[in-house]
Length: 189
Image (cartoon, rainbow, N blue to C red; front, side, top):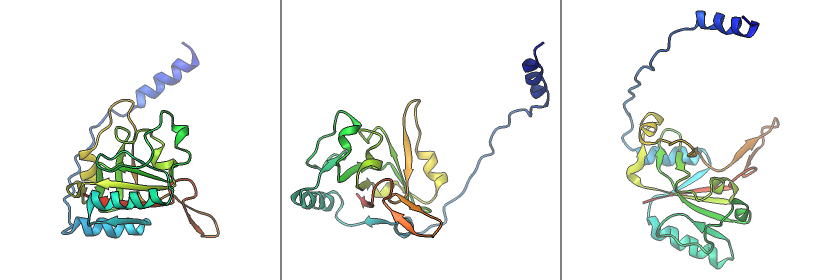
């Protein structure tokens, strides 16, 4: 027997039998999940737009297009001035991206996005500014509830986005937008 095999056999002999994860049932304690989501989104430097929905967002996009900004939209009902590109490299000059969020979490201001709605998975990270569209009935109180509503098939990509890109150095200077979107605006529909 090789030394490798003897080591593996020794590890097997002391291995603990697999145990099922215990169920975690955390009941929400929020009366106003939208209000809590707005507060925590503000804490992570994002902005919530409660009123106007897609109409208000389209008006904002139209204003940005008139200013000469490059806007791509992956949300049905909102039209930008750029189509989804064939390659991710063509996103390098996108000023604003409009993408749908699947679930928003009140306890931390995070929004789940899935590659099924992104076009390219780099879209929320390469654009200068990000607009996320979330259905008001998809705002949940905590991460336990959010996890129950999401899933990924093999090869899919998903991520929780909590505010725009942020980094800080040892001098305690916070920089927003250093390595991703400089702003995050969330529109409730």
